[in-house]
Length: 392
Image 1 (tube, one colour):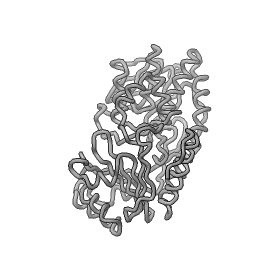
Image 2 (cartoon, rainbow, N blue to C red):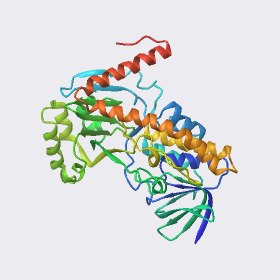
Image 3 (cartoon, rainbow, N blue to C red):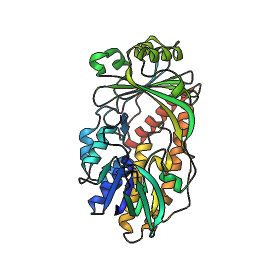
Image 4 (spheres, rainbow, N blue to C red):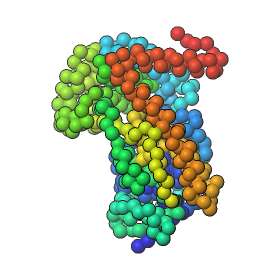
């Protein structure tokens, strides 16, 4: 069986969904093929801060900004930076609600995007068996169930381990030397007010000894803690049986043995699921030779560390900019791709470098000091921009 669509998107993440939403608003024929069986097949992660020039711009263009504001995490833009003795080096709750980067839970944002699409646009459980450059001069996808799909334009938005990327490059994700170990404390204000008070309502960074304890309180009152460690990539599979709660706690106590009792209390309180996340990146500045009718978006094009909060924002900007290029060049797919790619390359390279730099200084011996200096400079710049005095 064969079917054809003007635009075929592989991957129902932020990039692919924004692209599909904007194009369907203009009556473009779009199909999104997603390997996962449903939107709830796996945990979607935590909060995302939406940047004005990228994530928010995409939501405006998609006509979804009001829904975003209705679902955003009020008060989530505050910051706390501590050392291992739980001494606060920086705290800013003044901009927790009025800042320009509102936070939203990833699953809420994805729900908004999915609900905005006409029924049937997203095909769940659609696993790609292979990609081909062309069949009758059209990009061609074969699904594992045997369905053959041709496209006027194929958008590979299939994530860090993109199969579509293999048509362009042999580049693969490389380990950055740091693994984040994700844990949870549920309904923290009621079940664990001590840890809730430590973490606050916004972003929490405890940096010392080239290690990190990071936290956010999400829209539902759950605390998501990440313990950051410089470990071998194999640590994620070799460290411990992650189904054994006490073994996990024992392992973390060993890594953070001389940290303050507040952090020991967090370790004693964490609950599963426990998810190790080795941080990876594609080569910064990755480009490729153009191929007719095919391009990449999001992590498939420019995977980077999360330490600038740019991954989802860039993915959404990719979807926005590719949609605009397609609409501006309705009869010239390859011209649309060229316009999109030539703007995407330098934009993503700049943010990937920023992400790499931030990760490096956060896990440096004086990472806490550098992060405090960074946040102080940001606060000063914001005060100048708004004509306000800087609070000390």
